[in-house]
Image (cartoon, rainbow, N blue to C red; front, side, top):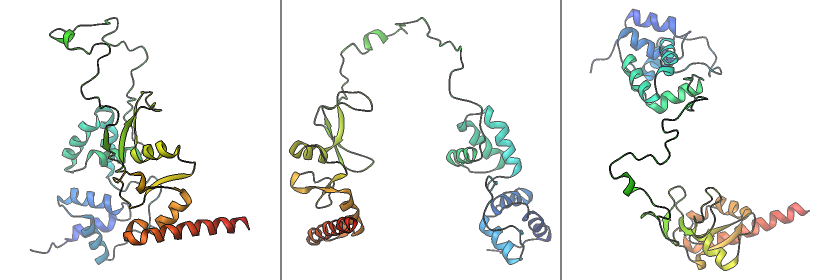
Length: 268
């Protein structure tokens, strides 16, 4: 592979523009000016090898542009009020030969307070299309296929149904308990908490239920233990979950002693 050689005009451009633009913006401008595809790392290496300096202190000033050129920023400001984000990003990429994602462009717009002017709300006085059309029948089999009062959808899960929580990996079980968020008469609750409370009552304040063997799916009373949050902090510091099974009882005892010692020292 032939090594790329920077011509005099390339170097002159970098030398004069580096004091004005940070490396990300400089790279974009350089590639646009000379129809190249240099990376930020390559431009940075060239600057270093030729001992070009910008005269700025390290770091960025608050609100300073570090990603797009002035032309690209102006394009975003002009077109964002006219397009949705899904329309804006492909048009932006096509205009400047980029490959930005929606999340990257949205983050830039948000961080630099570039808004579209849209609120996502109906304007005051807006009249919905179905105003005064209560019970509107749209034809076909709509009337016979509508849910009837008291209908129970086929996908409703019965009490006792279990599933794995996608966020924390614990087993959830459907119980007959009011949902504080939706007002429904049932809700899903951590199974290990349900088992513990059924046997011993509510978990005391500032306490948690842990699995002795560290397995979140091993929901049996014999494998559950109620400990204080202070003790839990100690267990995490002692890396209980990484210890062999035979050492875990010892680690739990050490954690209890450390918590007790700390309580006694605080009383002195």
